[in-house]
Length: 191
Image (cartoon, rainbow, N blue to C red; front, top):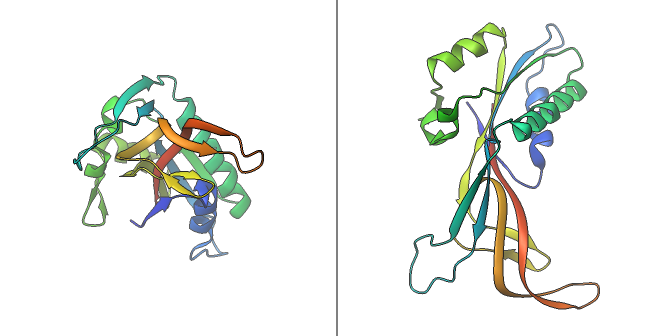
């Protein structure tokens, strides 16, 4: 299973790439799309660190029990797949199993996908020939600013990064202020 980081190009662009890779005009593809990123938002407050490489940021999570972010990701994936391959059958999967959102690195072992049996059974029921899996990705904090990237520690999934101390200047008006709020989406699309 190929893994690609979801950065600036966005999930929709990667889905278009997935749909066009090795496409045969003879038989329509059937896709199963599984999103496992939207169970919570994390609000991360940067804490000034001196002499430590440990992530000391304060994190608060806000549960999103109705799966609205997963639904939005699935609808976006569906639209992108239909644009790339109008004849494709697309099955959208958003399981409401809390354990699937935890320690998602366990799903990947030496390049092989290792999903729980009940999830694999649900995917098989769709008769999909391709699986697009959207999972949380943990990586170094890199909140984009006009003149570079800001932040400390690591981020994962969906949320907001707050810094109350860095001096910021707006590029248009040259106004000065302290701190910033940066929304983030650290996710990985695997095919």
